[in-house]
Structures are given as structure tokens and as C-alpha cells.
Image 1: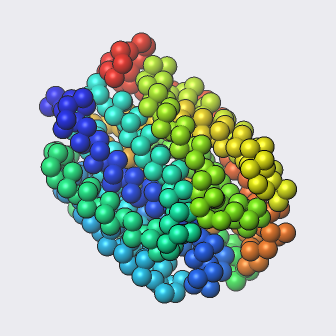
Image 2: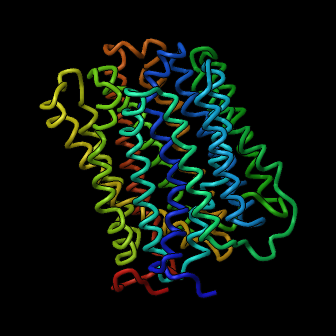
Image 3: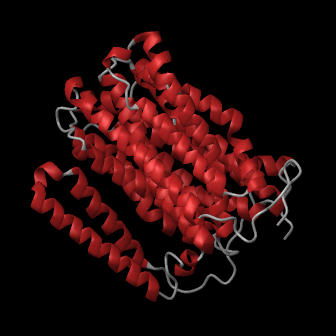
Length: 477
């Protein structure tokens, strides 16, 4: 099948539908961060509760996203994508009605299930619907638009929290979901993997969920478990992870095709994703709290602070995708994380002395600009590399694996870093939080440097990736 031309009206609508759906999930991931301080005050939530508000969503998303990709490949990518959008919207409505931390955490888990169904389908729909020559540019546009949704989240969340209620950071998803369903039904063709027989890997899905849930519980509840208890629960998580790998090796229809990881590029890109997104997720979590707790920013100002990243992503993300097409993924996937590391290193030194406009221009803005440039270089080539390295017919699973790895990195980093840097139940005290913030940011910078090193050592241009000069919007297979 030749596929639909990106420049056609239908091609643009396909990109719009996938951007709206996955952007809704990414927006929710970032918009909640700026609302955490107000949620804590309103619901009487401690730091562990706030970690679970973030990580409950990521836990369900990371552990079930592989199943979501597999379901789409088998039963129809558009069908599963639409089910995920509706599920996500309904769970968002429940989040906005929560009256206790426990209720909100439970609703966030349900949100994650919806996200696991819609997220892998968005990229797989681009890969299966559009012409091969248009896919790299479409992925670049998708990456830029969804990246904007992610980094614009703090701004939108800050406005909603300050002038309406933190509950609206969830309810805003309902109209977005309605538009997404309408556009997808109108423009996106159905697709599925041929000859997708066999039984579902239920055991693999259960083991993946149990392993991540156990590890997350151990890292967040370190204080209540104690040192020995934490180690014991982490050992159990490791055993469950080993069980997952063994089941996948023997399953007739595995949740994750082991053959995917035989590709050096695919494995290297996913290892780099784990390190990079661990740093990105933890950086966003800590920076948003630092601006409010230590610098005294109102929620709206805390959201506006990240606006330079949004502007850079809007202007340069698509060009980052085209750069990856022209020169291959190795250099962008090395330089991008290193630029992000420099930006995070600069942000590590933001403290109580950096209040006001002068403090923002001197201490916050430079780090955000460098960090945003790194994202522009990094995100589109990473996505395109992972999908290009996957065998034909496995776009949904490959997208699911990469998304699962990214969310797992964020999940574990947000769970572990507060305890590692000494931030606990007294997190609202700036004198306690600020030193922990600096240590956490330096750890994030180190993870980003390591991600760049991994890319340089193991990532190469896939054999079927476009090489050499290309005309605007096209590539050679």
C-alpha cells in the first residue's frame, strides 16, 4: 500500500488526530506537576502521596503500554486508540472529582490505563497510514506538537490552578477527547498487523505490572519500610522482572518480541531513552516544586517559567527531525542529551536569591534555553530511530516498548530521587527542599551525560534509514 500523502488534507488530519490524542496524555503528565503543591494543600497530601499522584499514572502507563501496542496491532490501531481516548477522558473526570489523596491516586491509575491504550497507537497510525517518504517528517511534526503539549502543560496548569481550581487540569481533557474522536473517525484509516494470531501474553502483562508496582512501592515508601524492608521489596521486584523476561522468551505470542532487541540500534536507543527520560521527568518534578516552594512563584508564574522551552519546540522540533534524516541518528542522539545536561546543570543552582524578573533572567532562563535546544535536537530523531529499527508490522509494539521505557525511567526517577537527596515529609520547608533540589538536578545532569555517551557508543543509522541529502519533506528508503 502506497499510503496517504502527508501534504493532503487527509494526511494533515491524521497527524492532527494523533497529536491531539497523544498530546492529551503528555499534557496531563506535565500539567499535573504544577498543581502538586496546591493538591497537597487542598487534600492534605504528604510528599509520598504527591509522588503516587505522579507515579500512579506512570505505573499503569508504563506497565500496560506494551499490551496497548499489541492490542492495536491485532484488533485495529484506530479502534484501540479511540477506546483509549474515551477511557482517558472518563478517568480524567473522576480525577477532578476526587476528595482524598487515595481517590485521586486510584483515578490516576485508571488514567494510565487509558494512556496505555492511546499512546502507542498514535505513532503506529502515522507509520501505517502515511507514505513511507513522508513518515520521518510526520514524526518530526508529531514530536514537536506533542512535545509542545508536554512543556506547555505547566503554563496551562498554572493558569487553571491559580484562577480556577486544580481540578480543571483534569477536566480540560474532556473537550480535547471529543475533538480527537471526531477527527480520528473522520480521517484515520484502520490498520492492523497481518497474521496476528495466537493467545495474549497475560502472564507477561501481569509480571511487568507487578515488577514495576513493587519497585515503585519500595522506592516511595522507603521511610516506612526501613532499609531492610526496602531492599527486600526491591529484590522481589527484580525477581518479578526476571520472571517477565523468561516468560517473554518462551511465550508463543509474547508481549515484547525478543527479536526486537537483537537490533543494536533499537536496544541502544531504548537504553538511551531510559536514562534520558529518567532525567527529564525528575527535572520537571523538582523544578516546578522549587519555583513554588523556594522562590515563592504562584502556580501561573511557575508555569510561565517554562515557556521558552515551548517556543523552541514550536520553532525547531520539526527541523530536528529533518536533521536526523539527513545525518543519521548518532550525532543528534549524542549532542541532544549533552545540551540538556548543560541546561539542567545550570538550573541546579537556582535558589532563594533568584526571585523576581532579574533572578529569572539570570538563573532560570539560560538553563531553560539550553535545555530546550537539547530537546529540539533529541526528541524527533529518537522516535524515528526506534520505529525505523523495528521490523515491518511491529510499529505498535516498537512504539509501545519505547514509550514504556520512557515512562519507566520517569517513574523510577521520581520515586527514588526524593529519598536519595534527603527530601521527605517536610518538603514544604524551603530550607530542606532547596539542597535536595540541587542534588537531584545534578543527578539528572549526570544521567543525561550517560545517555549521550550510550548513544555515541551503540547507536548507528539503521540499514533502512534515510541517508544523505534529501529534499524538503521527503527521504529515501
